[in-house]
Amino acid sequence: TWRRAHPRAPFYLVGYSGGGGMATLIVAALPDDIAIDRLVLVAPAISPDYPLATAVLPHVREFVVNYSSERDLQVGWGTRTFGTLDRKNTVSAGALGFAFSDDRVLEYRWTTADAPFGHAGNHMAYLNRRWQAAKLLPALAPAITVPQLQARWVRTCEQPT
Image 1 (cartoon, rainbow, N blue to C red):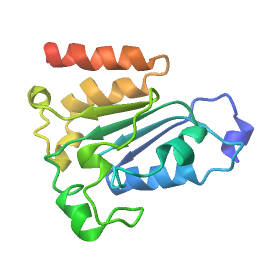
Image 2: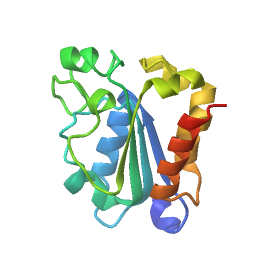
Image 3: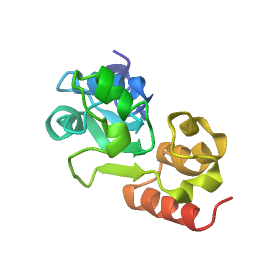
C-alpha cells in the first residue's frame, strides 16, 4: 500500500541473518507491479541457489548487495544443520555468496582487510559500527551507483580508518 502511494520514493530493504532470508522471501512475494530500489542482505540465512534472477531481481530497481563470510558459523554450520529460510540444509549465501552472477548483484565477501574495521568474519562482527560505517552504510547512500560502491569498498580496504 505504501509503495503504491509513493512509487518514486526510495525504498531500501535491509535484512540481517534470518531477517536477510526473510527480506529475500518478502521481495520475491511482492506483486508483479511493485518494486523496491535496493535489497541489502547481511549474512542472509537463504540458500546460495535461491532463484534471485527470476524471483527477486524483477522486483529490484537498482541492485542487491550480499555481505558474506566463510567464517560465519551461524549461516554456515548453523544453516547446514538447522536449515535456511527457504528450507534447505546447506551452507547459506551468508557464508558463501550466491551461486548466481549478475551485474546488479554485488557480492561483498569478508577478507582479512575487514579486520581493522572490527570485523573478524564471525556473525556478530557485522554489528561493529566501524565496519558498518565503512562497508554497509555506503550501500544505503541514495545517489551511489554499483561502480561507485565497489570502488568505495576497495578504497576503504586500502586505507582503513
